[in-house]
Image (cartoon, rainbow, N blue to C red; front, side, top):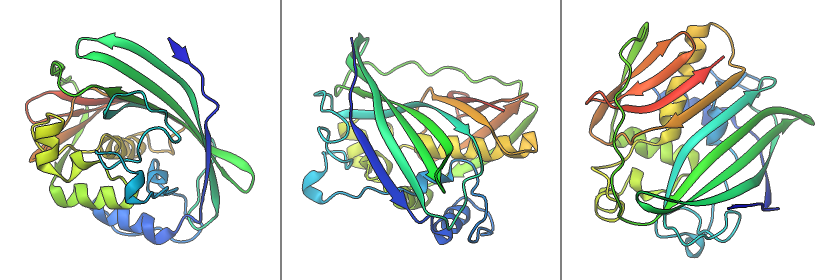
Length: 264
């Protein structure tokens, strides 16, 4: 069934250019962003922090469910998919406001047991106008269960970039996004509690790389992006970012598809 929620959250941020420069450096680029610079696509994820004290955190390091996101009794959280509409450029150094709301919660049973799908919508405003709209699909599930099959990635790309992921990058990205999820920095927890093969590369970090590549390949600012996570990428690992005619995907070291996206 689908449940509607009136939960709404509003956060503001000064959009410090130094934080965006820190992400550029972490990703291997020269720091170029100054006040009033247009932020690269998806860089808004390093802003609008909502830090919580330790007593308000769940076992996974995220804010405990039951606040903004309802508690559905399912402990494992995964970022499944997203969609973005870029209306006008988002600028560094200019105060912005993000309004988030839960559009719906859907429950169903899968092969691994009960699942809950939470859809969030975020609208970011600067100077009174909406500059970016984003939808996030989160999945919550029980501990244990079957390991989903990993789809095989396409091999018909017309362009590819190779990217290496290590624990330093995962730590820096977690810090810049205020993401406390332990699967990205606590290997015993990732393996023993959540059943992964090692530290997990952030889904948003994969999406970030794809969007930067997509903007370069299109030769213009992105206007719309849809992406979907299809398999986890764990350390130690390198991956191939692939592009072909508006489609982008991440191919893992065993040929598995970790994420797919469409951009324009």
